[in-house]
Amino acid sequence: MPLKKAFTTTIDNVSILDEHGSFDAKLGAPGGKPIIPDDDLVKLYEHMCLCRKYDEVAFKLQRSGRMGTYPENRGQEATSLGAAYALNGDDWLVPCYRENAGLFWRGLPLEFVLLHWMGDERGNAIPEGMCITPLAIPIGTQMLHATGLAWASKYRNEKRLACTFFGDGATSEGDFHEAANFAANLDIPVIFFCQNNGWAISVPTKIQCSAPTIAQRGIAYGMDSIQCDGNDIFAVVYCMKEAAKRARENNRPTFIEAVTYRLGDHTTADDARRYRDAKEVEKWNNRDPMIRLRNYLVQRKLWDDAKQEAAVARAKEAVTAAVKRAEEIASPKTADIFNSMYAELPDDLVIQRETMMTHSLGQHPEELPPTSTQQRTHQQA
Ligand SMILES: Cc1ncc(C[n+]2csc(CCOP(=O)(O)OP(=O)(O)O)c2C)c(N)n1
Ligand SMILES: [Mg+2]
Image 1 (cartoon, rainbow, N blue to C red):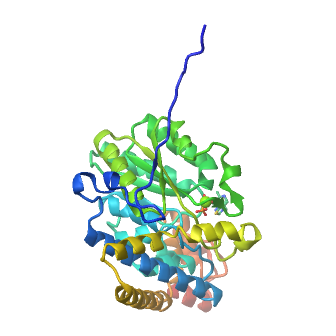
Image 2 (cartoon, rainbow, N blue to C red):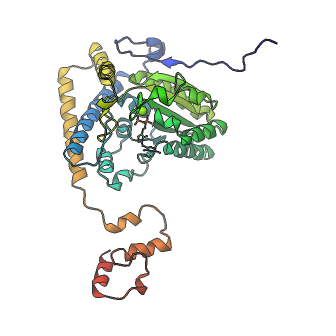
């Protein structure tokens, strides 16, 4: 008996504005209507200028001992920005840690990310209604949260979706596989947005995943999967719009693999020169999403050197003000460490909060010997 095919598939790769400046009008402006209007395009590029300046300043803050650690976003701005641009303001953005551009586009105040990396938890207290979850440092966990959020939206018939961001390395985590399986089998409106930047710290993607694309990992769970040039904001917006439509109309999840590159080190605790070839970095420098978009805008007479200079000056001013807000924030009260976890603090934690300034952490205040020093510090807490 001849062998039959049980299943065959292909994975599309979307590229609209390539690194040589050619623009695919069929995908980028179907019927003459651009998927990103010119006014928005200029705003998106200006936003990239802001985020690039932010990266530069944050890096220096770490180097001068004013911040703990920092993961540069340089080179990956078009991914989360394109994604946030294509969504509605009440769709969930569920980030890992390299999505500054998308989060700031949504409206997260700039100092929040600085506070996070300065070790101040108030950087994770996302303003109510912003529909952003805190930065997730444990790799992969946020994909489960996104699936849960989108599932809740489906139950409530809200037509809101969740878009979760993660790296190539994160697709090797069990959490990804559980979230993908669950979302595909239960028709959950979540977008799995993978930023394949070629590396998981010092591990190259090719030894992280022996399949030719990461997008295949989405196919394995039965969801629509697509690959795009992640340094091309048009391609990102195109894929996101398709995925959002699928989620809103049919509650179906989508896997998007955006191929990009981190131009900086993994974090300020890393030195990528130890494991990356300078020629590889050079090649990707030439594919920088900002250079590409700027060239396109200049060619369309929407941008010039004077506008660039003004945008950089505005960015500098905004970032300087954000650093000031982050560094001048009043110190938190010691008892605050108890106050953000539970709606109603459990009894044992109430006791800990009340006794933490004494020498007898965890004991009930009434059981403590009533020394005058303890009474004073107890009142202060
Ligand atoms: C559960 C877990 N394991 C390991 C780490 C350490 N770690 C931090 S970043 C990282 C690599 C992540 O690579 P990728 O998902 O490709 O994201 P990228 O940083 O390249 O954007 C690892 C292993 C972690 N933070 N969490
Ligand atoms: Mg990676």
